Length: 284
Image (tube, rainbow, N blue to C red; front, side):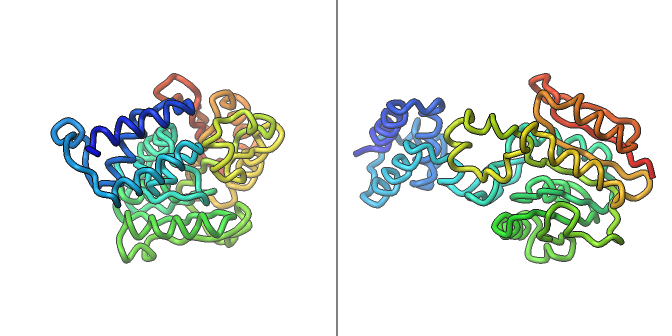
């Protein structure tokens, strides 16, 4: 069997179960299984496939047919131009979250101390540290599995000495911190999907991504209430809080921040024109 023939077989298998990006996923999985690149299909489509390559690809296509996310099969996802390890313990980084990182970067200065609440894979905190100078950060998550993944990513993104600038702590939001801990910026992409909406999500999300990282309880605002109420104690004077939100939560989260005493509150839209980030300054 040739490379192109195997690709076509993969496309057909994914299309039969309604995978929206069947052709793209079939190609990416083939490249991952064979160690090839995008040009191989066009320039070397007649290359022979080894038995090992065929079996590896068939296994991957079978998993994708079962709606296992592509990123959990390959174990990687690109985010902010960097490659992060992902697995069932963490949400797959989304392009929408890059808007949050880019907004924080507008206010980030050398030497700042950052807190990433609900850090997951660590993609927010580690991207900010990678693209800044002499900043340090703390990532907090309730999940030990998520923290282990964040540690893998810290070594990947920041190098073997990552622990000199990053601390990972397990805890229920701010319970994992010392009262003396103070930060210039607190950033969070907390669970914000309403419980009754989770069953309507795509199978890739509903069945494979960690529910604890998705479920924002009855109205989706449970974690925003807790974060806005507590974050001020851990912000330096003039510090800022940045929150990723769902497309319909801008006004509600803005009001929560206003009630907690934050100033100069902004609601920032993503590239689709939807509300995506709310930020404001500490009242301390």
